[in-house]
Amino acid sequence: MKKMLVAAAMSILCCAAFAGDGLDDFLRNTNVQARADMAGFSVSLSSQFGVNDVQVRAVLGSVGQPADAFMIFQLGAMTHQPVERVLQVYRSGHGKGWGAIAKDLGIKPGSPEFHALKRGDFRLASAGGEASPADHGKGHGHGRGKNNH
Image (cartoon, rainbow, N blue to C red; front, side, top):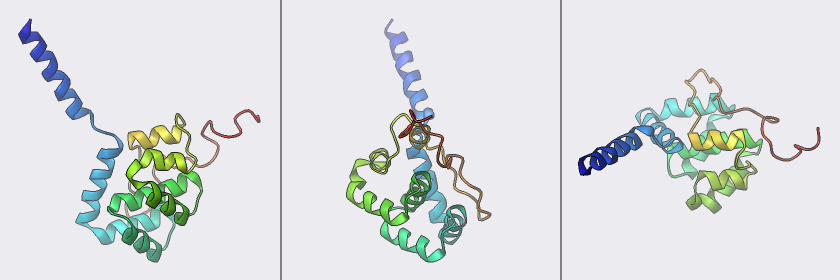
């Protein structure tokens, strides 16, 4: 019986280790990729989110990690808010985490956008600028206006 419990505990721990943390894994991988080629990362952000290099450099200089810059642009795209507004919310609520920042920007818990955020269902585009899969635009969530059909 004791051996079965130990085996069960080990399998749970192993599965948890391989399951990944969704957003945390994405952020970690993005930071590694960005640090390996910061110039390429900047070009990718610029082309993916349609912002100029000056704005990318300004955001990179305002955040702690390269992946934070990605998230600033991603949340701006998801919420259709200017980068300056997202940066303001980031600075005031950074210790709360990206879920809280997303909620402060109007992404509703339970919405497809919020689930994509928690799963880390994003992709950094190559220098060609492919859009990330979670950039759905307006009209795909179940937030405000759902009873106005």
